[in-house]
Image 1 (tube, rainbow, N blue to C red):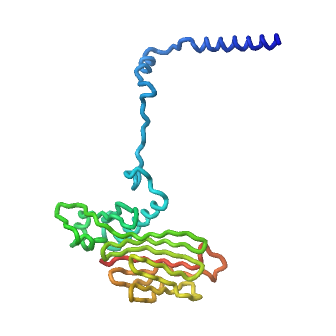
Image 2 (image 1 turned 120 degrees about the vertical axis):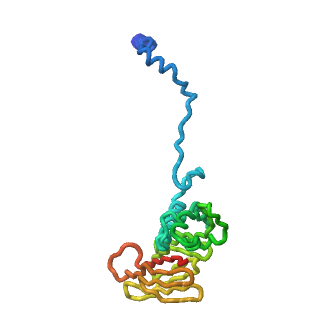
Image 3 (image 1 turned 60 degrees about the vertical axis):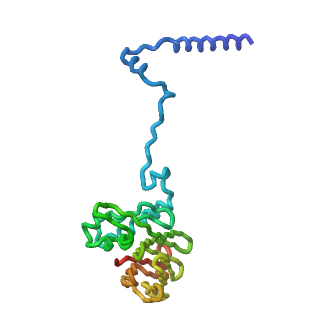
Length: 256
């Protein structure tokens, strides 16, 4: 018991000595001490928040993966329409991509520099419904957007389409275990692969009361837009292949 008492007492003495040493004043150059004394107390400092970036930063929250994919596919489609119409990059932009209705922003300066009439620009038909003064540089019009993106074990579907008045554009893709059919509702379009043992399948395209059989690479006009069959394949006869054996890809581009 005596051993334990003296052991504890010795430990207390060592601890007390450490405290005394730590309590001694700290010396430092006078200029350093002066700068330390001028600093604000820690509790008065405020945390700096770096503002977010991206298309939805002003809304206070970043886009979720689905909305981000939708925004990217819409932007890609708009750029393809600009190229097809011979417009400058940035002539038309989607300033909002949420929901089934989007907002298209038209750069009137670029339109005036490249087209004789504003209605000749990409999705310009909607501009005929608003008053555009010579001093105006930007105009906004609503448009309907169609977006579907599904991944299943038996197939994949990617549809994005923009419709503004009588102008329609779309990128459409579908794959599956059997010959596939895809729909673009904004264009009233139904496209179906015609079964065959050939590696490239013909496609039956129906728009309203018009039905045509198209091959890969064919372009056909239906009203105010052109339909191009970019791919229509049948790989079921191959021993090995990636993805689904049947693939169909179409593009719709406005002609006015």
